[in-house]
Image (tube, rainbow, N blue to C red; front, side, top):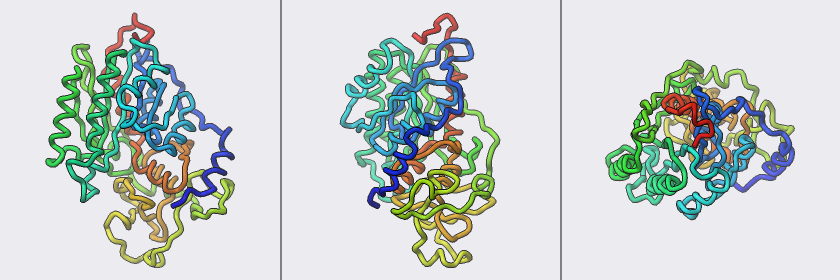
Length: 369
């Protein structure tokens, strides 16, 4: 899909309407000491970042290759220096240079992120062990190693799909685990489901939480939380969205700036009682169940429980647990990609809270050094 004029109009109309922060950022550990500052790699729209922000971590810098995702990040994290750049081209030295402009040397930091998962995804039947994207975990480790030369890296959080542990990717996963150990971290591996953390979605992911060795840090244990359990609870009362049209203006879209979707074209949508295939392209949600994983292909998005259309972007955002004031930038396809790739923010917050609880930060060290 070509970029619609709507994206430009929306950006202009909303330029001065920054999303208010949901939390007051104190950047303090409960002990009274400063929390490590966050370097966010492969930040995307900022689902994981939102979780750390909600737990009062400062995020001086975030980097992603997607320009649309970075525009989203800038909009929703106004105090962060969000950079559109290819980490492969930057290499560790380039990342270090960007970080050094925003974080003084010798400061405590944490590194968070989830490299693109398509090369490991079980939903990708053609995934191969030699997919170039599978080298990104190695690059992630190399960046952490480079940052350790200037900063005290207290922790690393790495999120990815379950497929990264499959047999064909065993060498990559083993190298990741051994690499974190060699860099001086104790690693906690957890398989987490978003549904256990208040998100109405059966989304399972691997989260590695690596804490600096010999510091007395405890194991990172995200605590399950009650919350929404069904599609109906998340989106059941929403008004109908607008269908994509190049003549749309922001004022035409009801409820939320992202409450729009593609116009139904398949004849399947003409019969709400008809059967939808259970494949990737036509996966119809059930009102009183959790959503399947929000992980869409290019311009594809799950079918609304009514069977008459696809979900709107905003509906998908709510099924991911994004707060209502969060807004995605970009054209429709770019928004589909961003909502698909995001870590559910409530899950991100539980991870951040567990990391904060595990940290041992002395009260007499108020500057985080």
